[in-house]
Length: 194
Image (tube, rainbow, N blue to C red; front, side):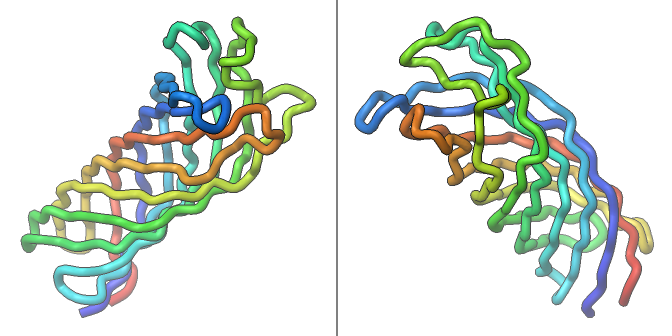
């Protein structure tokens, strides 16, 4: 039977970035940082083992570079991220689940936390007055986890991976930059409709 649950989730996100300064340049990886994430979850079951969900998530991504070129530079991007996921479940009251689907996001804030190094091979600034990063993020999200049903309540633990197709660079200072996120979260949902 169809049923709808609403809940809250919290966790943390580990982000990283890959960028190329010009077409044909070797891709460079920079490490990210850990940041908390929070969200509102609306989950709809259509069948016993399948459903869908939409989330409204406050997410911070970016990089705290430790490579030899960007050492000391750190930039954070805060997004309102909206994943729309298909859910597949195995089990009854204790379940294993797989979730996959696209996500969209809107840039709320960007800041250069620390800027030590400049140069041709360095990721450009994004939090300065003259910077105009793209506001839209989009990509794909996939996750696995476990959930436990307690009557009308559900407790879910999950690990997710997200890849961004969008590029915040809007001024052609570098050719490409893409972010990835690894998310660890715990959610509590309550059934509101049968």
